[in-house]
Length: 227
Length: 275
Image (cartoon, rainbow over all chains, first blue to last red; front, side, top):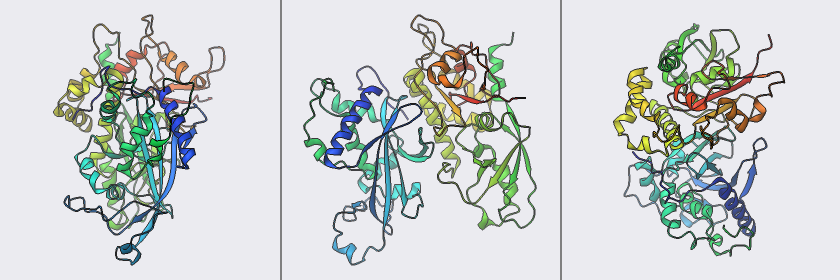
């Protein structure tokens, strides 16, 4: 199994740039009320992006991981709490809904020079979701990707700053798809925020969506013209 | 003068005499005797404690047995850290044998990763090796290896086979003749007193002028607070595999000879005993 790592033509993200993109990302998030914040670690001053939100989860329809033909698009396992429930759910056809608290963190990996998505989820009573429950709640269209692993896979790992168990989306192939999009001419993509691009691609795999408003915002006038 | 290769053997065959005691609140059908075992410093708790589990399961009912976890003086022990690291960090200046408490209930979800099978340990071990090679060789060496070579690294660790392991691992310890060392050194520095589990940063083994960086250089750069200046009283110990290497030791040499099988240097900073 090879994990592609680079030559000079690949697009690597330096830590300073990571912080700049995150700063820009948080500003945009604040403008649209999307709830992301930057948390700084007191001892070493490094930091990470953080967002917490609540989702309604349909507990009794765990998708069968073997049934690849099963079209789950009707059964939206992730529904924002504000969205109206569709009729079948309202009449109790699908049974219990539970609220799950999701916490997403974006950290920088100096070893691979890419951002990494950490997340954890628990029910309101504090019980954490298991890896199976997390796998089960991944949208069906992504499950094939995850099962073929280990390129895109979810494992439980220790959070490098908090020291607690989190789930992590494996960063292995990040550079390849980022390079494919940004690699062409960096000049052309001067104003593309790497974090927005990356998060909008990997986030949905684990139920994290970026509103389209991120793309519509004009980049702010900044002294960091190279961003 | 000891051959450098002897160091590799000494590191591999290091053992910690350990006494496992069942937690008093676990429900047993008769009294559970403690279980004694020599633990390999370079391995992982859940990889080498099958006998411990079997021993305590004999006095328990099947329904009382859930995922095993270990604790030392109230601190849950992270199975994904090598055993030698756990000992150096938490118990190195206490009397042997190391007393570990065994639990089968109330798994501490907020502190420990789950370890439902040996596959989880293998995946973790291989992920560490891959990360180490990303730092040392931009992943070139690990990616050139075949799947069977990866498997041999794991089997060597699992079966305590020094030669089998090093037949492959030696390739991960090489570097191009034009360079004088690895690109970056894979290391993690641990202190039991911090919330942050470890410090890991990019650090080059060779300075721009060509000099070899030392362990002291690494510590000064990465956690300056950990070691006090020479004139002050040295309040801490810098420990790797149960010993305090001289701060003048080239970090490249340490990386090649005193890394754990996962190819990382796991370094503990602990309070110096005052006796």
